[in-house]
Length: 199
Image 1 (tube, rainbow, N blue to C red):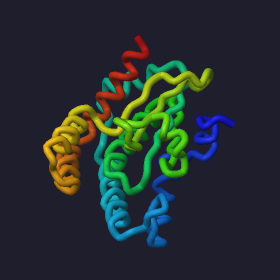
Image 2 (image 1 turned 30 degrees about the vertical axis):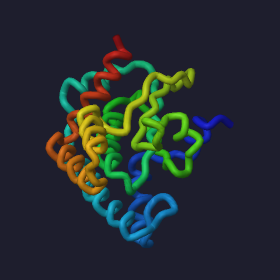
Image 3 (image 1 turned 120 degrees about the vertical axis):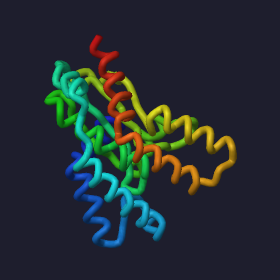
Image 4 (image 1 turned 90 degrees about the vertical axis):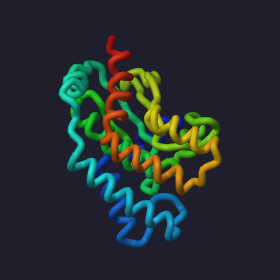
């Protein structure tokens, strides 16, 4: 079985992903093998972030129309983890976009359980997540990829890293950026990707 089919077979819906995270936290764990205090704290923050986007994020009307116009079935595979701050902001938006189209089938997979797949989609040599892989559902052909974060926030990350900022400071500024942007950059970049494919 190839790695794509294996990932799909072991994948979860967004609802199943959220239920898994809640179940793990009830047992003082998170996804992956590292259940340190820091990783549990990150997971708790991310649960709050996902709860916020689930309640507050509303698709732009034009994006809703675009999603409803998709005629060919697509498979979206998203590599993610519960402790990943970027994923907590992006995955709820992807889930709402997939829900808006009857032709998008969303599959969430855990990065650390799918490293062979992850290593085909590195960002600057790193296993950065979330990573979206869009496929033609019928042929399996790769249509495009996205991630781990919108261009503006990726540029912020790259600049701060180059300037020698501490990881904690970079993460703080990234979280502020996400809060101010309200998921719109993620939505627009994914919509542009779809628009390009449809024309």
